[in-house]
Length: 336
Image (spheres, rainbow, N blue to C red):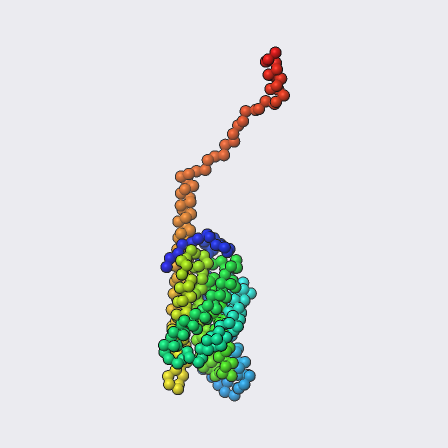
């Protein structure tokens, strides 16, 4: 769906060249993040696979909670290392991450597990897991990402590039994923560090991917004139991917009484690669379109300036006006 630039906005609206700036460092950081998470999983499953054997209780819970923070910490670290020329303000990016975590813990989790009681019926059948996973879990979780970005950073002058929608949405999505991983660790009284590291990474990659897609729609809406259903369609797409992914992940990792988390990790890597590649292509295409329209407008303005040169500002010379006293004297002399 194509959209055209507009200057009508209630928010700060920078020039088109700035809006369409390509943040090369962001995409490199995302790629390095994937590699870093794979190293993290390999570390706990190959080198430190026995570290949790003698641990139990609060220490195992503490290590599980620390592991849950690793994806967000790695992403923030890599992003700032690779985006040094024009980084987002640290406090704002971290603030969006924290806000995403707070809204998830205060609203999304109580709503899904308390009000809708999804644990009592969601996994009863394939149909309930698919429909409930999309229409309920998917929409509630992706709504958290949207609301955090929309009311947390959307109107801020720092949100001044199209790709910022993706950047801040991923930060909110990682906040969401971190709380979900926290909850998993606490509900199970700690986790096996090997399997736990895989689950932490799968949850983080999945929610970061869906958030990136929603973030593209948010960025487009922020700087382009889009149809009324454009942003709701982006939210619906993210919710659809959310529900389908976790349905497939549950089916691929569980086989009878055995659990194979590596299938879920493979699925998460494939989905992340596809989602980020699609978002990268869409952002670049939109940026190129914005720059093309801006260049065409400049050429049009230059042509109009040449064909209609401005009228020179020639001062108008006025004849001197005689003073009133002189006129009266002359009139009296003429009459005499």
